[in-house]
Image (tube, rainbow over all chains, first blue to last red; front, top):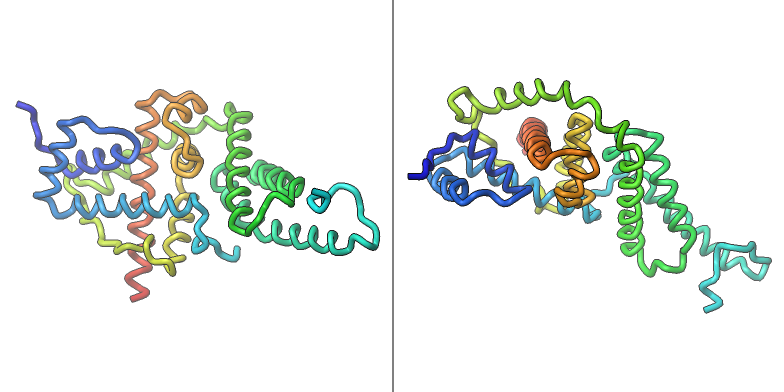
Length: 69
Length: 211
C-alpha cells in the first residue's frame, strides 16, 4: 500500500517542485487527494499559478511591466 | 540597398535626414536603457556588471539600426541580447558568484517555520490574491514582484532568474553553477517559497488597502 497522506507542508513542496520538474505518480495522486480535502492548499496552488503567469509576462517584456524608473 | 547604410561614416549636409534618423534611433535606444538596467541589476546583483551588459547590448543594437522594423521588434531584440550578455557575465564570473550559500541555510529553516506549523499545517491560510497578472492595469503587482525578487538572497535570486527569466534548463543551470540537481531544486524551492511569502505580505497587504 502506498502511503498517500501528505501534510500541507509536504503538499506545498510538491506544488513548488511541479514548477520545475515532473513529480512522481504517488505524489501526484496524493496531491490530488489532498487538494480535494484541504482549503488552504488550493489557495497556495492558485498563488503559484499567478506567479507562473506573472513571470511569463515579465520575461516577455509586456508593456504593462514598463514603468518610468 | 544603399539606404541601409547608416551609422558608419559621417554624412555631409545632404545626409541630414540620415543623421536625424540615427538620432531618433539613439533616443529610442536610450528610452529602453532604464528598463534593461533594472533587469540586469536584478539578475547580476552588481552595478558595474549590469552597466557593462546594458552598454554592450545597446552598442550591439547601434551597430545595426536598419534591422529593426518596429518598436516591439527592437524591444524583443534588446532583451534577447541582454540575456546573452548576462549569461556571458555569469559564466565569466562564475567563481566569484557562488559563495555565501551558507548563511541562507538558517534563513530557509526560519521561513519554513514561519509558513508552516510543526504539524505541517499552514500557520496562516494563504490569501486569495485574485488574478493580478491578468489585469493589464495591475502594474502595482509587477512592481511588488520585482521588489520581492530583488529581496531574494543573492544565490536564490540568481538561480530563480536563470530559470524564469533566462529560461535555462535545469541541466544548464547545474552546469553553470556547479550544482547537483537535488541542490538546484532545493534552491528553487526556497526561492519560490520566499517569493510567495513576500508577495503574500506585500501584494495582499496593498491590495486590501486599495479596495
